[in-house]
Amino acid sequence: DTAVSQTPKYLVTQMGNDKSIKCEQNLGHDTMYWYKQDSKKFLKIMFSYNNKELIINETVPNRFSPKSPDKAHLNLHINSLELGDSAVYFCASSQEGAGELFFGEGSRLTVL
Amino acid sequence: AQKITQTQPGMFVQEKEAVTLDCTYDTSDQSYGLFWYKQPSSGEMIFLIYQGSYDEQNATEGRYSLNFQKARKSANLVISASQLGDSAMYFCAMREPRVMNYGGSQGNLIFGKGTKLSVKP
Image (tube, rainbow over all chains, first blue to last red; front, side):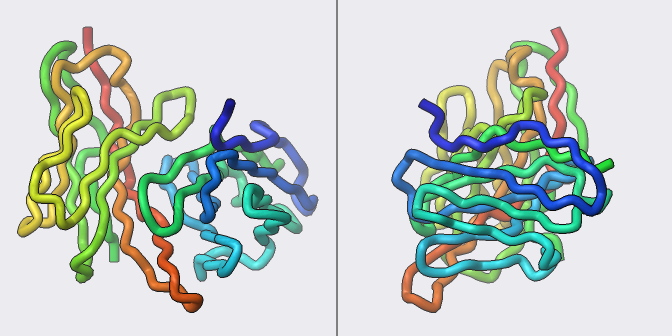
């Protein structure tokens, strides 16, 4: 059983489109995250969220929005995609404020 | 300001030898956590080892140990008896607990830029 799963693993789309990446965790964790890994492998936090509070990294454009239908899911919506959005997006989860983060396998987004 | 610094973009090590990957961090908090993750070419992020700021003993997990020097703010990863499968990117990360408005605590991990380790046969 995959602990943190993301779909799709690969996504190729045109500039200007809107896309979503889904994330689900079956670990019973209460906090979920989205990270972006750029072409130089740098990992940057985008959002952290539990069912009480959303923390948005101030550098994230408002074209990006997390949506959580329930505690086990945190989806990432991206509007008006740009070339610079091409990256690998990782979902992760942890128990509130503690312990290591468990990562999904990553979703590689390519914007043409 | 960069909070996690990994000064070695790439490292080579001979199979079966030990290697140390450097990590320094910057924080004014007394309570924090330090982590190392491995990312092989397949792309997944694999948790290796954790050190809490109040832990007096250096963390160890199998062939991995963390050389924690609090006064120097360094948390170097030592891999003993390197194997070919250790070839990967290695990331140091720090968690600074953050008290939330609702009273709980969150704390995302802040990552360094990584070190690419190559193990030579």
